Length: 387
Ligand SMILES: Cc1cc2nc3c(=O)[nH]c(=O)nc-3n(C[C@H](O)[C@H](O)[C@H](O)COP(=O)(O)OP(=O)(O)OC[C@H]3O[C@@H](n4cnc5c(N)ncnc54)[C@H](O)[C@@H]3O)c2cc1C
Image: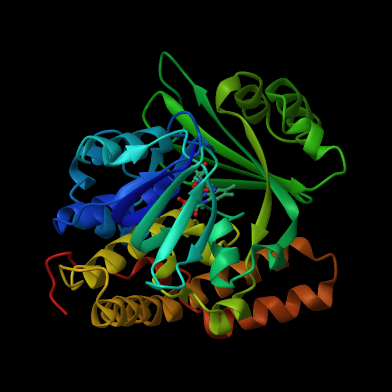
């Protein structure tokens, strides 16, 4: 049976971005409701590399100090870099939210604008209808909210590489330095970064194959296929894959929204907007998707803090909310466009077999991104900051 409920801010998706957005709003004393379709909060993909800009954002959310205790600092890099277990990041954010903020087993089927009030109405697969003032689509790469806003996820593209990720645990401690190391053999790349003195995060980039959709469903097959593609790598690396934690293994194809979409796309319809991968899915080549999602959260909360309290019937309130979301989109567009373009070029450089195309890409990278760390030197600003 259909039930109708009124909520001010609904966040669709309880991934990194959804939780960060709810937490940023909470820090501004704004209540929100996160709807997550899974039975529990999922932390797919083992670990996430967080660079200086991500740490600024986590600091503004008030969870940086607790997370620093879970991961060692990486040396020989620009600014603070740590590799966090995704589950630690999600737990730190979820634990800082008021009880009842996150509802699991709640899949949003569609969103439409109420023709009378112009405010969004969400239809859930369990038959519930929610009336909201603002809806934020944090529902990842295959976002249904992006569809509604007109920022079509079917336009997403695929790199010809895919990435496998996982953890290897060394109960008596590993011998890897606190560094980010990448080894390449042909078109296979292995990256390693320690999380702690016992836990090592690694990822392997290789060309996609037609069997990948089958392989990705079975952790044993992922490990087998990795051992196969890593022939010629040092024995220590092979050993690392052989001893990897099965439940941490994931093989992912790399979907991205082309950078030019980010220049022209609409990211608001009425008072519905997007954040995180639903807005700006990029390849992982500069390890910024997650941190950029946390930056989105901080900025969005800062703007939405100016929402007027009061009636949903007021046309004036509706226009203020639209204008606040437009300010958020305007402020984010330039940053995410450059992040996406940088990642796109690196991804395409790995994709191409052509010497000429690769040389052109390298030339563009040198001209536009002379400082390879430019993207880490950004502070999204405190949540206290008043606009
Ligand atoms: C291989 C790889 C490596 C990466 N490495 C890094 C890295 O090192 N550093 C970094 O910063 N970033 C990295 N990223 C990017 C980062 O993982 C993403 O940018 C980040 O996870 C995006 O978070 P999100 O919350 O927007 O989306 P997601 O994590 O996809 O979360 C979306 C959530 O929405 C839920 N959902 C979807 N549809 C619905 C619906 N209809 N109703 C309700 N719930 C719904 C899903 O169940 C999910 O929980 C990497 C990405 C990949 C693919």
